[in-house]
Length: 247
Image 1 (cartoon, rainbow, N blue to C red):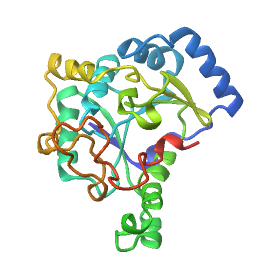
Image 2: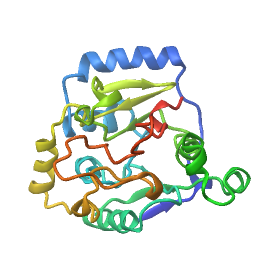
Image 3: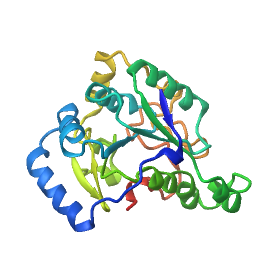
Image 4: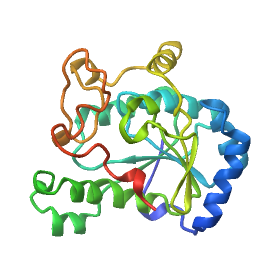
């Protein structure tokens, strides 16, 4: 497995806001009715060849998109944000999936140590300013990781609800383009991918975790809970970490 260092990450510019908006309109007219591997393949090999990456949390549903991507191009760069607050089980699961799927280009991005020392010296920022904690540990590292790319694949889905209800297959992300191959998938579609490809489940899923992020902000949910993200920032007026708002 090729785990790239931050200093090895590609540099370069991306599109203007106007160019990104026009490109999305063009792509939606040609590919907007596609999903899954049928959408991934032309994005990776034709439209953004060499200029596209993928983000993955290696959470409870992550293996579904990772498996589809691996079948299209196992060397596609995959960004994994190691916030320094993740469950140990997530790291173990990542290694398991990388080996099983033959993924060869994992880019592990971590928070800037100097910024952590300045703004979160005791590692407890999540308790006083959860938005800033997410920014330091996820948003800013992803901004660095996306340098040099014009597009990125995400595993977001409409059935997660909230701000994802009307998620398009292709959208602008500031000066980049975001592709959501699983936007229209249902829970049973995700289950089918796991079953037909014999994919392992995240070890914490059996313990009641439906969506898994950082340890301090991820909780178990009651049996029968249908809101997939109910355990994320439970009891707070927050449903997203912020990485899908970056420009």
